[in-house]
Picture 1 (cartoon, rainbow, N blue to C red):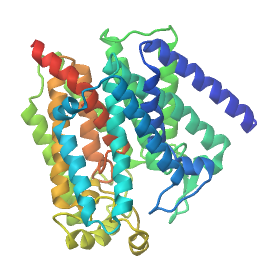
Picture 2 (cartoon, rainbow, N blue to C red):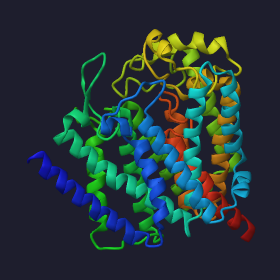
Picture 3 (cartoon, one colour):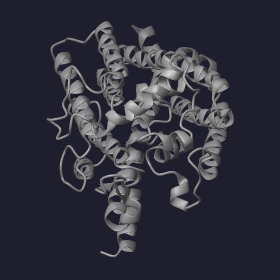
Picture 4 (cartoon, helix red, strand yellow):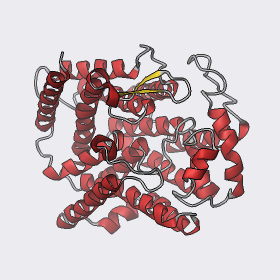
Length: 444
């Protein structure tokens, strides 16, 4: 099939899917397209790549920077027009304020404070987008629309790029020369993260529908969703057609489904795991993930062989070995948010980034930053557990995402800032669902 015909068919299919989303959430405002655009950019290639404008790693792309500023400004206008009580919302989510505030303070000891400040401004965008979602008539439905739109656009478009525009959808490994599918993302892990989220979301949707919480708006909706799950699985397995194409993504997908399935089974037997136990689980993973680079690799649990990987974690051991001396130069406060990865450091190190979000956080903001990050993650845990008492499916979905994110952070930089996909989703859920949780607690 000619690439132009494939492009036209894909665009028509995406428009059809977006129309289906509209039927599922007719109350969604046009302002919800702001968070949608932001999430599409966050899960895809920078605008500079699409339009070929370029930009250095330190300075970044002026096109992307201006687009983020535009989203930020329009977002502020929307929440101002809707009279959103920003102070009240942020008070309910003090952990985000603490994290963002410390990141801002750390800029003062960065080696390139102006660039660090620009990177910090970018971290405000997810918070503003979350405030827009929170101001929708039904924040839970708005979140579902956000997730669906991302999947409806990014999954078909990734298939198109890989098969008909390979110069955009494929990449060859820097060291191995192996073919990688990247689709709308900049590297394979970005695409597999998108696919694993899509698969888990539709599994969760199917379970809710079986319980009668959601209904199909058209008779063929389930067939469309099955097709998208199959397409996501196809992309997830990569050119080698193996589930372990990305070992990290496969492991996290198993965590997502096992966590949600296990908690659902317990709920069926009238058992909801206590907040203390969930907190202990998250703290244990954070501690394990933080010490892993310093120990030189996975110690207590090493699934490498089962995932067809070597014990060196595809070169991560060497990356950590290069970076730990830099971390120990400023272990308490780090090198300042956004101030570590300069062009000179990238040239001196084996690879970029750290491939461990906790080590990445130490490099930027030290062990103090890890504490603030942990507070944010634990706040998500507690709110998710509270939500389980009034809307179990949403609470379990939230906690499963959190559990997968902190686990993925061991081998990828998954929650080092609010701009990372999984951490951005956690920010959106935390801010947009806080008011709903508070109202439900008052009723109880």
